[in-house]
Length: 481
Image (cartoon, rainbow, N blue to C red; front, side):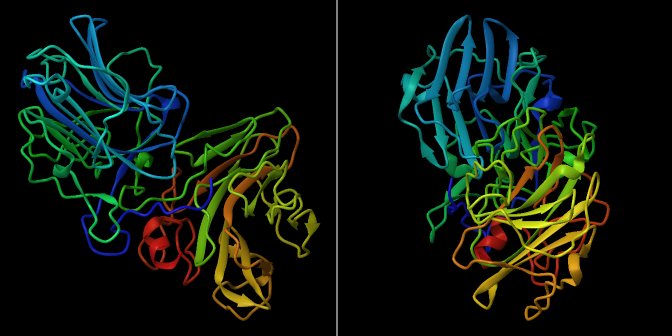
């Protein structure tokens, strides 16, 4: 995967802004649910949501209902990373399954399922749209008989978000959801939820608060951080219906500012790794005990701008074997960061040394271990003797007396080549150690006590970014990247 244009159309200019998403972690069986108190329209409805995937190659349900094995509904990514919309109605299988595979974990998808079983044309009874465009090519397209009832909007039957309705605990979503809508009684086009930007032609969200949601309709903006089924909860319905969803296994830390209008960097699950487990929306990485020490790379690469991020180090066994830094390769197969010819840099926890392409770059940095927070700042705008600048901090103090805001100083600074795309990266320097890393590119999955944003108001960091340095998100990339 290489550096790419993944910016929402309104990254810098004005437009409708989505402030929050909800981060679902399959390992903790995160979900939301509501049981309608009355039946409403089971033949005509629309489901719309924005999703950013974190886990690939496994069934990942976004929502569903399940009465029994003969009557159920699920919207999900299957194990081949295709979108499936599956209705079981009276034992008959009806579904849309795309030919296309959706494997981009660096960007947000907008998905709309528009249903009207009363339509006289079979192909109009289920319509699927991705990023504003109707899908017309399917592996499987099986439509229901006319005028049948689905299980959606059936009273007494739980509608679930972040998983299917089936209670087998095997298909939870791993990723981010934003702007989730259920429209009861209307089959809507995607233009009710988004539009193509007139300058970039990129699909972007619009304000949906004026839509008619219907009796069991709901609108989830994920602005609440509570765990109760009320207006302050993570499952708060802001459609005006007060159809608030119950919360299962989610916490306030799962509320995120990584959204379809400001997309944050994460670790990249497409990067080939060995014995590394990613979780928490690809913001946490745990190394296993196999002895492999592959580099894990992020989704965003940058060649200009001034950037800052933090990494919280953990791991019960030898966490000081953690190493972290940057690499120019978007897919780095090296056994250790800083020990190859891929223009990578590593700061080693166990001895405080900085290595670049297998060479000791000198300096005496502090060692680090469990619960230490390492900050990395890179200045890819200012050139000094033909080189850009790399800085490391530990628990808020930049090492070797470095001052990233003094662009003329060479104290504690490491020189970076010009015209290179650099990716944040982590690695494991010990053959049997099991360090873990909690990445904070500005929308962390772990608790941050201080709450420091960059100068543009983006990000939530333990320590304040140096003046002029910014979080790795698309709002900032559009302005400085």
